[in-house]
Length: 216
Ligand code: E4P
Image (tube, rainbow, N blue to C red; front, side, top):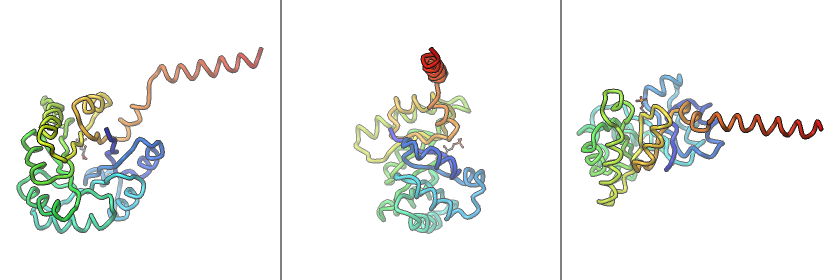
C-alpha cells in the first residue's frame, strides 16, 4: 500500500518525505487555506518536487469546460500532478476528456460504491472514498473501500483506491486490510503510526543499561 500525505504544509511534507514512507500528497482548497498557500502554483510546484508520486490539486469550477481548463493548467505544473475532480455528472464529463489526454485524475468526494464504479468507468486514475466523513454520520466508510477493491479486482479496473478522510491510525490498518491501494493520511496520524510506548520504554531501558555497564 502506498502512503500519501493529506496536507499542503510544506514543512510537514519535507519532514516526513525524508523518512522514505511518503509516496505522494493530496491537497484540497481547505488544506491550502489552512497552510496559508496564497501562491498556489508555487506551493504545489514545491510539494511536487518533494515526492515521486502524484500531488493532487483540486479544481474549483463546477462545469466540465471549466474543470478541463483548470486541469490542463495544473497538469502543466509538473509530471506528477493529479487533478482532483468532484464526483458529479459534469465532473465525469471532464474525467472522460482528461483521461484521453493522459492527464491523471483523482475523483474526490466519493461516498458510495456506485459513485466509485461510475468514476472508474469514466476513466479516473484514482477514486477517493471519504471514510472519516462517512463514519462521522454513522455510515461504515470502509465498506466502500472493501467493495470497490473487490469490484475493481473482478473487472480488472486500473483505477486506484485512495482511502481518504482518515481520522486515526486504525483507519489506516483497516484501509490496508480492505484493499485500498493508497491511504492519504494527515501528518498527525502519520506521526502516531511511528509510535508505541513500549518502543520508548525499551530505548530508555537499553540506554540506562548501557550507562550502568560503563560505570562498573
Ligand atoms: C482527500 O483527498 C481529502 O483531502 C481529505 O482526506 C478530506 O478529509 P477530511 O474529511 O478530514 O476533510
